[in-house]
Structure formats: C-alpha cells, structure tokens
Amino acid sequence: MNVLIFGATGMVGQGVLRECLLDPEVQLVQTVGRSATGQQHHKLREIALQDLTSYTSVDAQLSGFDACFFCLGVSSSGMKEEQYERVTYGITMAAAETLSRLNPQMIFIYVSGAGTDSSEHGRIMWARVKGKTENALLRLPFKAAYMFRPGFIEPLHGVRSKTPAYRIGYALTSPLMPLLRRALPNFILSTEQIGVAMLAVAKHGAPKQILESRDIRAVLA
Image (cartoon, rainbow, N blue to C red):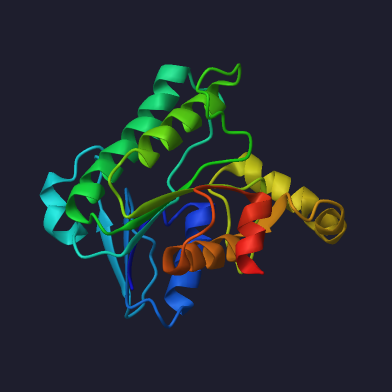
C-alpha cells in the first residue's frame, strides 16, 4: 500500500507517520506539507510546498497512491471565520479535489474533531467549518472517504504538539491520564491508536463514513 500523509509534522500526523512506517503492508509513505519532517526512512519521501492550495507543480508525484491520511489543521483560537475557513476548508479541498482526480480508487481519511457540525448552521464557528469540509469531502469521487472525529488525543512515543498551549495542557494532564482513560474510555484516544485505526480503515473499510471516538476505538477491537 502506498500512502500520502498531509500534516505529518503536526501532533496527529506525527503519530500516523510513525504507524505507517512501522506497518509492513505499507511500501511507500509520502508526506506533503510546508516543511519536511526531518525523519529518515527507506519508505519515506517528502514534498515541501509553501502554497498548499495549488498542486499543479507536483501532480506527477501525487499519483499512484492507495490512501491519503489528511491530518493537516490549525486551531481556530483567535481566528475569524473567513480566515479559519480559508485554511480548514480551502486547503483541504484543494488537496482532495486534486487527489480524487489523480487517484479515483483512493481511500481518503480526514481528521476532523468531536463536536463537528454536519448541519453547517450551528453556533460554534469551527464546528460549522469542519462540517462544511466533511460534507464536501464526502461528495468527492473517491473510492471511499471517512471522517475521523477524535476527542481528547494523548500523544505517545515522543509525539509533541506544535502549539505551546497544547503542550502545557498535555504536561498538566499527563499524570491524570490513567484515571481519565478509565473514566472516559470512549473519549480519549492516543496518537498510536488513531494511526493504527486509519490504516485498518484504509485496508478494510468501516461500517460508517463518520467515525466518532467510540467508532475509532471499535475499529481497533
């Protein structure tokens, strides 16, 4: 299986990249982002693009892939809706429309978030934009598309968030994680679990296209 990962330097992307490189069924992993991961591996190729809304210059390098794990995203904190939509919806759809044209048999998996608003009309800005993005992705002519909606994500194996506030939050909650996992087993997932679940869905599919934390956990059972 040949896999594309968008956003491999982010927290979820780092975990997904790790699991892809460890999986013996994955022959090639190609990352796409504004910067390279800095990792070295015989399976790994990387594309660094400053403009993530245009892929004409790298079309040839984006063909021949079986799955795409789209982990690229930003926090909505301090952003106006138009700005957040330009990043969340605009960049995602530019990539997905290109990939659906080049790889119609691709499985596309998008990392969304718990609380995403499929109606696109709710009160919470980020949830509306994520819902609009999910709905547009589900209309594209991929072999299949799946929306992952994790809640709280526990970073493992040296994975770190690029957002300082998140790093502080994870440091503060780390001692409580064993208790939180027992109390909220269907809300907390690790970066490892998300990566393994993405690979499982890419290989075998899932019973629904929108997977909440409970559904993602069920894929691992």
